[in-house]
Length: 105
Image (cartoon, rainbow, N blue to C red; front, side, top):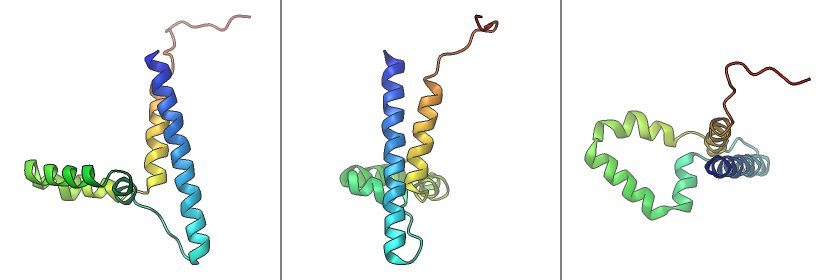
């Protein structure tokens, strides 16, 4: 049951990544230039209060961790981040093969 939920969440994230790619493509075509939505902008649009609280918490607890790691990850394209996370969840939800797993004929 947990595997089903993880796979479903992975598919939802893949669909969100594809939708973000379509939106970025439409904005790029309309604006005559490349427009890529960063992860920080997408998260701030969905969760504005939580993003401010997240930033304050990270800067208070580990200020040396914010700039080189978290800020760099938040600059990643939204479509790439959602697609990568969705693909990872789908890959993790696959059944493991037994060491000796011969195909039946």
